[in-house]
Length: 344
Ligand code: 2U9
Image 1 (tube, protein in one colour):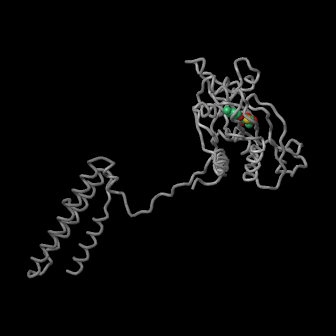
Image 2 (image 1 turned 90 degrees about the horizontal axis):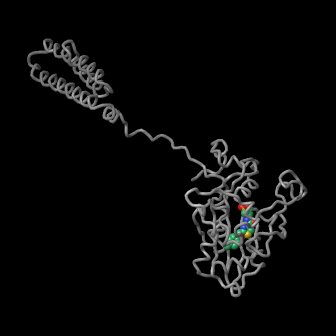
Image 3 (image 1 turned 120 degrees about the vertical axis):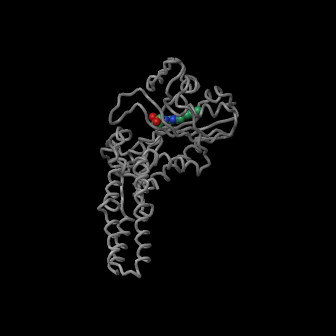
């Protein structure tokens, strides 16, 4: 009798853990336990060896065992007949730990853009954004580049066939124009974003890249303010262990204009491949906002002055991480992207 009880307990454990994902597996269960030569029948057959005074108690136990096997069969049948999803649902062990989630990395362009933006935010600059599809006025004409101006030649772009006035913006300067047109002064903004140029793609040029431009317009803004702001920026960005120089330059939208260089961080200024053996690397362009621009946007150029600057994020990123080919930024090769700081 003890043996029989152990046998029933062991069958019940086996039945509890029985798994069926298809109807023929549920049928195999039925045959094994409930069929005419099944285990339930076999255990029932043991009744004849049970003492007469124990038959009643045993009869109840065996009946309960039979009901247990039948209930399990009904459960398997319903789950498998209702299709795979419910069959699988019956298989999900909610106590298992979840699958590991690989942590991605931030794109190097985003890392550098965020760093640049955060430095200028600490100086009180607010972030301004604008459309990537622009009209001729905001991208060129308002910026002292009327039709047929030679400077347009270096900023050939993509045109939208529905409207000859629409183009993909060649710089984020159009965002500053839109901000100036709002007429609310002073203006102290930083404009990060993607820009487009009709260039043949190579290691050193692409048909799109990213800029951060800045604009500060108020009473009495001077070139000294511009220099001090940009000194702060390069020191925060690259440290203090280098020299800085301003070179006179020309941009249609600023007068006077300059380019800012820092002594090469790789060779310390002695000359190497990165600085093309000059000892200097160009970081950004800048200048005092041309009075024509202020007037174009309804700002009194006798009352207000301003400075502006612009930099290519790809260029800064290539210097910072010593990346030699611009195309790596848009190829989405995870072997490249994985090398940068995880996103969390
Ligand atoms: C307004 C007034 C002035 C923005 C400026 C530069 C100089 C400059 C280049 C850096 C590398 C573009 O990405 S790049 O090719 N930019 O050198 N940008 S001053 O001047 C402005 C902009 C808007 C209303």
